[in-house]
Image 1 (cartoon, helix red, strand yellow):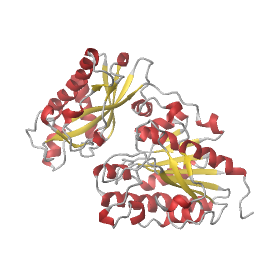
Image 2 (cartoon, rainbow, N blue to C red; image 1 turned 90 degrees about the vertical axis):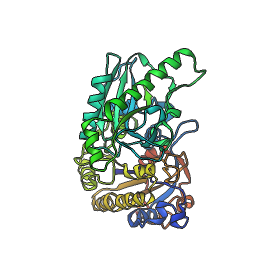
Image 3 (cartoon, rainbow, N blue to C red; image 1 turned 45 degrees about the vertical axis):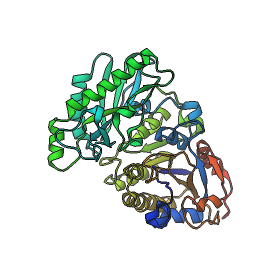
Image 4 (tube, rainbow, N blue to C red; image 1 turned 30 degrees about the vertical axis):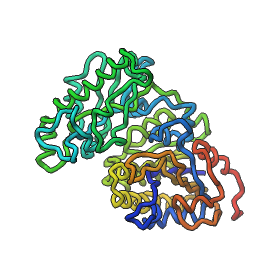
Length: 428
C-alpha cells in the first residue's frame, strides 16, 4: 500500500459575496478533487485543538499525525530544524519575518515614517526573493547579532533568530499576517502576565531591535532597487512564533511506515525532520503561485518508489488568503487540482499495488479575514480499491458534511488510513 497526503495550505474559506456566496472550493472547478470525493470517503477534520492558536504549525502537526497537545513547543523551532540549526535546551528560536512598513494608506515612500508611527503594509516584504532576503538578513545580523542574538537567513520572507538563555520566552508576540494594515506599535511585544518590570525591559529589547532594523534596511541597496522596480521594500524585521526544541516520536516508530515530505516552507520541512521523514528539496519551489508544481509532483512519484508515505504541501492558497485576494486564491486552488492532484491521482491508479490519497487543508485562511481560523476543514480520503464509497459528488466545505467519516480529530487520520490497509475492498 502507498499513501499520498496532499495539503492545500489555507485552502478552506468562507462564503465570498463576489462569488455569489460561494467559497473558493465551491466556485473553482476542481474535477480531480471532485473525482476523489465521488469515489472516496469524506468528512471534516479538526486540526486545531481547543485552546491552541490556529497556526500552520499546530494544524500541520495534526495532519502529519502528531497531537499538538502532546508535541507542540512553538513554530520557529520546527523551522530551525529545517534550516539545520540545532537548539540547546536554553536556546529560543523566533520566526523573523521581513515585512514592509509604511504609511496608513499603504504607501511606502523613500523617506517613510519611524516604526513608532508606521503601519504594516505587507507581512512578506512583497514576497521578496530568497536571494535578496539573504542580503538583508545578513545586514541585520552584522549590526544586531551578538553573543546573545544570532540571525539565520531562510526562504523568501521567512527567517530565524536564535536567542540564548530563553530570553523573552514568555512574552506575547503577534504574527504579522494577522495585523496587516494595523499600526505596528500597537502590536509590539508585551508581557503575558502582569507586565512586570523585567518583562517590560525584555519586550523593549525586541521592540528596539525591530526599530533598529528599519534604519538598517530602508536604504539598503536591495530595497532601493526593489522600489525603483515598483516592488515593495522589505524594510523591517518582525519577531513571532518563539519556542524551544521539539521532541517528536519518529513517524516510522509510530506507524511502521517510511515517508517523505515535499514543501517549499521551512515549517513543513522542520516537521518532517522532527518526524524522521526524508525532506525532498525541489528546485523552484517558492511557496507561492510561481512554485514548481511539476517538480513537486514528479518528486512525490519518485519518492514513492522507495517510501510508503509522501506528504506534498502547497503553500500558495494560504499566501493568497493572507493577501485577501480571492482571484489569486482561486488560481492557487485551480493549480493545485490540475498540477498536483491530477498527476498524482493518475499515478496512484497506475500502480500495481493499492494506494490511498488524502487531500485536505491544514486550516482555513478566509480572504475576508486575511488570517487563519480554527474551523474544521474538509477532507477526502480515496482508496484505489474502492468505488463510490460516499454519496458525495463534489469536494468543498459543505458537501463533505454528509460524508461517511463525519468529524475526525486530524491526528487520527494517518492511523485511519493505515488501519484500512488490510480491510477488504468492496470490489473484492
